[in-house]
Image: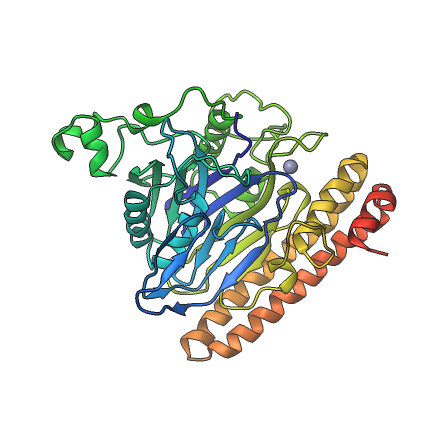
Amino acid sequence: MTLDGCDTLIVTADDTVSGNTLFAKNSDRPPTETQPLVQQNRKTNIANSINKLEFISIPEVEVSYKHVGSRPYWCWGYEHGFNEYQVVIGNEALQSKLRPIKPTLTGMDLVRLGLERGSSALEALDAMTAVIERFGQGKFEHPDGHSTYDNGFIIADPNEAYILETAGHEWAARKVQKSIGISNTYSINNNWDFISENVLRMAGYSDIQKAKKKLNFREFFKDDTKFSYSADQRELRSCSFLDYHSGRITVKSLISILSDHSGEGFQCATNLNSIEPGHGICMHSDAASKGSNTAASLIADLCCDNTRLPIYWTSMYSPCTGIFLPTFIEGKLNESISFGGINASIDSAWWVFYYLNESLKNDGGDAITQLRGEFDVLQNQFFSTAYEIAIHSYNLIHDQKAESAEKILSKYMEENFVKVINIAKSFIKTNKFTQNALNSKLSLG
Ligand SMILES: [Zn+2]
């Protein structure tokens, strides 16, 4: 049994109302593993330098691109992120039959490497597969107890997207032709477009043409002994949702699927079995804090026609008790969003959202209804202001006024953040649960 979940969706431009590609991910992790959102500027690296990743080191490249990533606090890499070229990447835990004998790359290393090295989805795919072949990745035992696994990824830019799936040093990839969701289950069977050469050899094919449409990557590598939560149901659920809403999909639609608990009102293309409580696309740990919980979410609204900046809607902890903040890589993120470690802190937005969720668990439905009322009003305000500012700032940058754009965007993000965090803190403070457990942890006063 594996603890980690995650669901990642890609919506092609012809399926969205706006005509722009959308990407979405829920990162499901151990329930108290802090996941701040961090920003790294573009960096020119010293020649022949070494890049120290989580468990191994690899040669550095000439330039690492500016990016923002959602980073489990102990980790070099990210669960998902986006870069200055509108490349957006998210990963999924997969379980192959392979067992590396020594530490390798992690999936989160690979997300970050793709963002640092890819100025397009294809370039990121090439950078990631090159290091996968050379250094390997996958499930291995780590003495610190961190869970490791093989990986699936969606790698997108405004014009195209790829699904990449891995097993040890091997990989297969396919270009996304229609909107799709992936989960903790291999999705590439014999429908790959690219594959590592060694897989062909392992499977006994002399060349790629002979293997096309025959070599089934999923069947060749998947480990049937590993129970993978509700992965098949979640994959079916997100794909069926995307089919049903095809042509009408918006950021709001994606917020609804990322917040899905398998309840009533879910419209999709097929009859689906309901998912047991806690194991939906919005994943919740149980009453004893066992199992995974959605730790952070991203919806990327990319822009393919150079009329505005891309808007990255980011949420911390459970999307159902959270709010998606419009985030711009061209501005500066609030410090509290980027801060968070093993210990709870009022200075960490992640911990505030964690305790907001905890407090609501103990306060029945009324508090959640009230919170949603307040957050939904703000969310609609963000929808009505974010696109104007994205157009205005794009024009400023186009007119060589990037500094002005940075100031405007940073101020906008800061003002939004203050409104949101004040609501979250006021709910924690007035909640009965706060009186004993939370005040001592967060010193809310
Ligand atoms: Zn939820």
